[in-house]
Image (cartoon, rainbow, N blue to C red; front, side, top):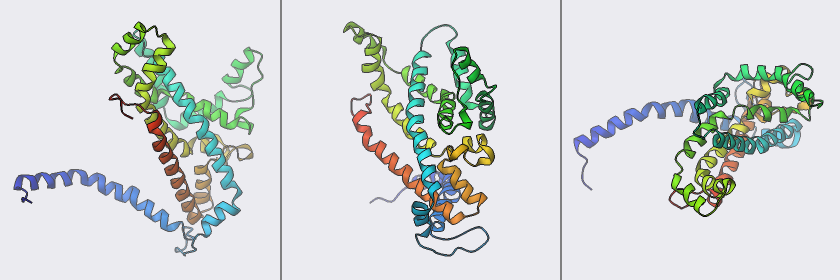
Amino acid sequence: MQKRSLRQKSEARWGYLFVAPFVIGFAIFMLGPMVFSFIGSFTDYNLTSKMNFIGIANFKRMFVDDQLFWKSLYNTLYFTAFNVPLTTMFSIFLAVILNQKIKGIRFFRTIFFLPSVLSGVAVYVLWMQLLSPSSGMVNTILSWFNINGPAWLFDPNWTKPALIMMKLWSAGGAMLLYIATLQNVPTQLYESAELDGAGIWHKFRHVTLPLITPIIFYDVITSTIGSFQIFQEAYVMTSNGQGGPANSLLFFNLHMWNKAFVGFDMGYAMAMSMTLFVIVMIMTVINLKLAPKWVHYAGGSK
């Protein structure tokens, strides 16, 4: 094996220097806390005492004794199961509609994109006003059609659908990804499909949809991870961050927050964080395993 030249050694040192900030930041702000949480999950750490090793007691308490754990997990799975497919389909629908070459289309793209860049807390406060049972705009519009609107954030049966509807409002971020992908679909494919007698639906089903599946796959992965991490919405939109009526908005992260920073039961909260990490990893692996069955790439391979 030949020795590296001085130039190669110099380039290697500069390479290590440029990646050093990321490596150091990752080690301090991500890997370090993860290792600390893993160790702390086997202790009774509460911020005021030293860590005492208690084995798997936190995990046993979580799965056997803490009924709110199962409630928070159910709420999170419910939200994820509906939020991910609905926001994905809505983003694709917006992208297809706003991919037309008509005058003023950039204005409409901007309008639909704006909600995704607004401040989270301000948006949640706005939606609390919109969903007010007595004076909210949503129920007011429903009343025009003689529909008696629900109590939304005050009715356990409607709290999670209300949040899912709110998340649809901010689908503009993913919409831009789909528009960029749609604009790269070769027009020759549509022309060939038209020669074969394909209509609008068949062109979308057999040309557009297969070519945007890589972006759909990326969106589903990131949306799934984001849905499992839902916290801020429930914390802001429920009284004192307690999870709303009948704990219907007590999501996993909110329950973990309350254990860590309200009850100062840090050891138990870190055990919950490790459990969430495993759940998200399992969901990601499942998505990766299923991807070859439906994700198509431009080269024809899966």
